[in-house]
Every structure is written in structure tokens, then in C-alpha cells.
Length: 369
Image (tube, rainbow, N blue to C red; front, side, top):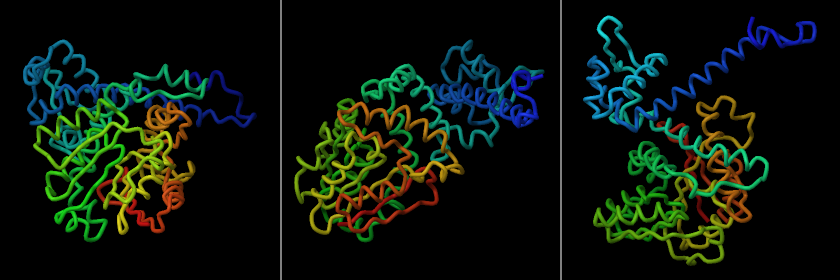
């Protein structure tokens, strides 16, 4: 008899023992899945999946040697991967093999389909669990500085979903934009993080100038060093709090503004969007990439990564907003309806909502005054 059955009321009380048992089984699966997720993250970060990408079977010592890692740790990791069904094991020879069908979404060469990248969020968010529990009682937030690798993971995430599609799919959402970028315009990216999208555009379009703002000094330092290493004289970055951007923006200064997954975790997202409207020149365009979902929970039941996105929201996006003075705490799943409302209230008369076939995670909003 399961725990659910032994503690449950009788069927006469309207309690379904079958449903309880099914949920218990599901919960055990969740526990195993959560543990596996941590091991997937480790496999990605250590390069173990990449070391096994050729599908050649090897002992734990062989695989450790390929990856340049300690055999004892690799052996235990392989145990977790075998138990989870990710890695095949031959008991007779003591060898392990990564099936090619699994490698197709676990190795770096599989990008943009490398789902192991997303597994990193679980460990990173787990590092602030105690802080989040305290916030449930206080209503406060956890600041950006408390997260060790979030910007790094986000950069790798967007490096798969945004950067490969930027020129062929995202920028063409604004007709004539590429031609304008080639001729030379001023571009602003807000909440730029490590600035990889800006760096890519600055390299493609040397006649245009690019500016990036972000609250994180660490991210801006990385972005600046990267721009210098790439020799991008048309690209600059600033550490900037955007909570009063509507009051201290440079008016009518930029032809094109972007935010990539940045609006919802601002302390004052409405002020930032109002500032974007004010800083655009006549005829300017604002392109916002943000999480694809509904503003209504019941409409997200079939979202393919809904649980992950709500978790990331609760343990990062919402809380970093609430950590700022007067933070609104929109959260990652603020949804299309709320996004259109905020963009429209800021003075954008036209808000187009676009979805790209390759990207189930995001919507792309094209906003014009």
C-alpha cells in the first residue's frame, strides 16, 4: 500500500485512491527528473556529453580521459546518467555510450537544440532557495548580485535562440531595417546583459553605432572587454539603472531600440518602456523579444516549458524586480496581453506580436509610435 493510500480518506469521502497513486508516481518522477537535471547541467559544464558525442563506447576511465576529468566523479555521474536512461551501459564490458539520438539535444554541436543549456538554470536557482523562502515571508526580493552565473547562462541560452536567428529571422521583422543598419543609424539595447547581440550587430553593420545599458556592472565589464577584443569601435556599454529612464533618457536620440528578454525583470518596466518611446527619433522602431505566454495562468496549461518558466520567474525574474525600490515584479510569465498593454500605454500606437517557428520560448514585438 502506498503512502497516499494509507493516509487517504475512503472512496466514500470522494477521495480517489487511483488518482492519488498516479500523482504519487508522478511526484517520484519529478524528484528523479530534478536530480537528473542537475547531472545534465554537470555533464554540460564539464564537457562530458561532448566527450561522448562520437557514440563510441568506453569505460569510465576512458571517458574521464577524453574529458580530462577525475575518473571517480565521472563514474558516479555515469551511474546517474544510466539510471536516468540518458546513457547506455554494457554490463558485460563495463562500458558506456551516449546514443546519437540523445546526443542530438545534449551536445554543444547540437545548438540550437542543446537542451542541456537549460538544465543549468536549476542549479543556479537552487543556490538562492533559502533567500527566496525568506522573501515569501517578507515580500522583498533577491538582488542581481546574489546570482553567480545567471548572466552567463542567459548569454548561452540566447546564443542558441537569438543570435543564430538575428539576421535571417529577427531583424527582418522590421521591413527595411537591415538596409538602414547598413547605411548607418543609432541603436540602443536596454538590459543588454553581456551584450552579445549588440556585438554581433556591431560587427555586421560598421556604419551604425550601438549602445548597451545594463544594471549589472559585472555583465557590462564582460561586454566592454569583449567589444574591445573584437575591435568594435562602434559599440559602447554603460552601467545604468533604468528605473527612471523615462526621466533621464536622451530624447529623440536613437533610430532603433531593442530589449532581449529584459523588460519583465526591471524594477520599473513601465518607466523603461516610456523612456524607450521618448528616446526614439521620429520614425524609430522598438523591437522587444520576451517570453511567449499568456498573462492568464489557465491559458498556459499546455505551454511546453511552462513549469520551467514559472520557476525561473519566481526565483529570478520576479524577485530581482522586487529587490529594487518599488519593484513591480512582473515576472517572466507576464504574457502577451500585459506586454501589449504596457507598450501601448507607453505611447506606441502600433504593437505587432510575432512568433518564430524555431523559437517556442519567445515572442517578438515590433512597436512603432
